[in-house]
Image (tube, one colour):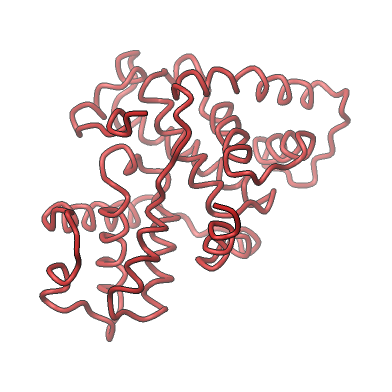
Length: 264
């Protein structure tokens, strides 16, 4: 598979099928955020590892580079991308449990109970199964995803930064999933921008002036700094404080690492 087929210029990001169908760039970005936040909430409900939800969000962003939101609702596709991601990352859940979690989060009612013969249950089940093949075909069955989180863990061993800054960088990556960064920047660039931003949030944990040169990297420094500014703007504009329950379900780097090293 040609991995470069999933990287786009900033101009191409503004000419997606949804935008050509009449949405403004801002409207499409808002819907991307809504879809990813929904995906994250379903993932938290199902207690899925970071690896799975990051893969699901990546599939989601790629899907809407080739399909229009006017045709496929973002919640339906977000749910389906997460469903596919559980299979790809070999972290499956019972279809019944996924269906119920999707319905509960769509209706914002965690106490919702669904009978398997109910209208809502059947609709969500059929939606997932019907859209699964559409998602796979749209992605050209190219289901390999390189995660910036893995690059972040590699940077941890190369840079003299505290665990606190690594945790902040980890959460910045998690909170930025609604933005289509994975379509524009390579994973290592995203990880380096998160570290740069996280250390700037710290009063005592700063990178040295020559930190970039100390890394064996083919990443463009100017691109990293530009992305760090974008991530900060995104954080200030879109990050919403989530419930304590949701935060408790937000995965920690060790969870991602353990899942990744046990069979991946």
